[in-house]
Image (tube, rainbow, N blue to C red; front, side, top):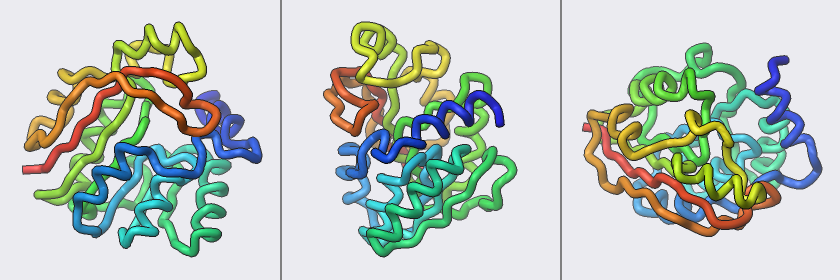
Length: 206
């Protein structure tokens, strides 16, 4: 097991859900504006957002590197009486196919700096023309917030954080329905508590 996987297995290994069982507020608001179809959740962890989408009529796929997160996600799905196609591994190794999804959700999907843009490009290929990306993650300005208050969570590596310019570069073939940097208050389980700076992006693939 590599160190990155161990970090997430340890975090998800507690009885409590690290980020709670309620969906992310941005995801909840934005997904309500879309017609349900097939959606992929990247770096989905314990499954709170995927389960919410499934409850609301979506056919849900997800992936992560943590078997512990997957186990908790499937348990939550079972209790909620929904099903998820939840795969474990690196994205290129999984059996998703081009143009498979109507929507892709990246909710705090902070991949290692060396692969994050490549992952975005791979995910773009999985999205149908006319499909939607829903993205919320910490901005580069968040570093000062997490330094002041570690309870707000998020990477402390600047290169894992996002800028508007990076999103524009990674998703050039999109109509940007929303692309903002915002300061928000988070109350999501044990690990997202406090004020932070995020990038919010809703894009429709041309």
